[in-house]
Image 1 (tube, one colour):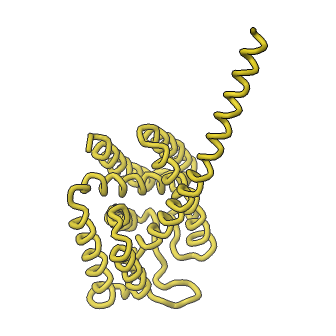
Image 2 (cartoon, rainbow, N blue to C red):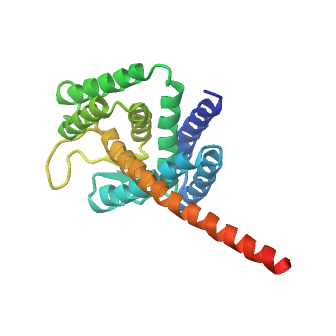
Image 3 (cartoon, rainbow, N blue to C red):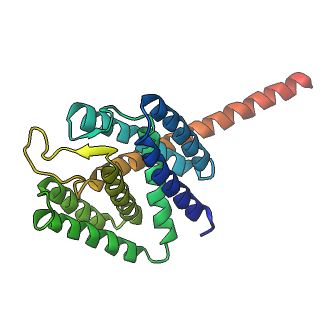
Amino acid sequence: MGRLPLVTLATILLWTVGGLWVDGHVGRPGQLALGIFTACLLGAVLARHSPAVRLQALGVVVFATLGEVIGSLIWGLYDYRLENLPAYVPPGHGLVYLAGLSLATICASRPNALLVVAGLGAAVWGIAGLTFLPATDVAGAIGCTFLVLVLLTTRRPVYAGVFLVVAVLELYGTALGTWTWASSVPGLGLSQGNPPSGVASGYVVFDVLALSLAARLTVLGSPLAAARARVQSISARIAARSIG
């Protein structure tokens, strides 16, 4: 397996814990500095991974940022502490994906165990939100149902890893007050917890879209690379003839 997944996961978890704590003590200029550092960290971590993983992580950043704009700034599902979209959030989504992927890689020898833990965790959390948790969480239960179905049908450990990472992130971030979820889904009236138990289902959608985008770009990249090689070969032959 190598040390890369362990180093990646540990680095991201340490920065998440420290970075969100720092966020609670700074204003918007401080958030901008956190954003720059987070983007640099994402770039440094991605440099150690394969081109395919880089495409997937950057795809998650794109789709998740669109989701943030719609979910927070437009729809009002949740609000950040300063009622903005902190600069560290977009690159942070890339780190979350890499953390989930790293966890799945670490558990590669026992992928079913990771899937079972994530599936049971989602199911228990969803049921708890409908029974004994302080805030009734109907929206979260719907999200958890979707997530469990995805895990059962796709059996992709990366989704399980992302769920567990997001669960920790959401519980920590909301406990600090970095962001707060609305008590009900605007426009639908469905109650939701803070955080909703099924919030990781949104990340799964981002992952699916990112993986699809990466696959399409890879398919398109092969003919382009072949064409580039042919052009370079022709250019080399012409240069050789000119010299001769």
